[in-house]
Length: 106
Image 1 (cartoon, one colour):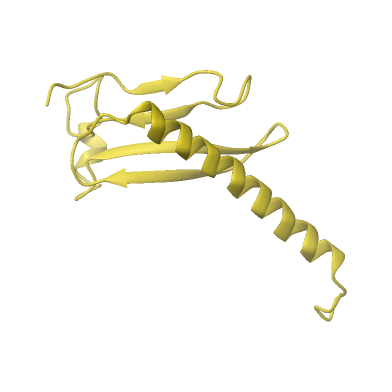
Image 2 (cartoon, rainbow, N blue to C red):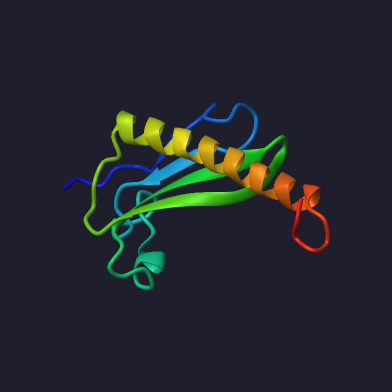
C-alpha cells in the first residue's frame, strides 16, 4: 500500500477541531508516525474524531484498524456523526447528574 499523507478534513466542526485520519502509522514521516507505531502494536491506522461542545474540546473518539487502510468518505462521515451523538449523550448524562438530588434520586 502506498503511503499517503494524513487526511485532515477541515470544517468537520467549523472553526473548532478537525477530524484526523492516519492511513498507516508505520509509513515514513510526514505521512506516518513510525515513532508512535512502535508503541501502538497491533494498531496500524487511526481515525480521531474531536468531541466538541460549544467551543470546548471535551474528548476524542478514536477508531483503530489493524491493517493500513484508506479511510473512505463514508467512514469519515459516519465517525463524525457518531462523535456528534457522543457529545449529545455526554451532555444528557451531565445534565441528569446536575438535576439529581444528592441522594441520587430525582
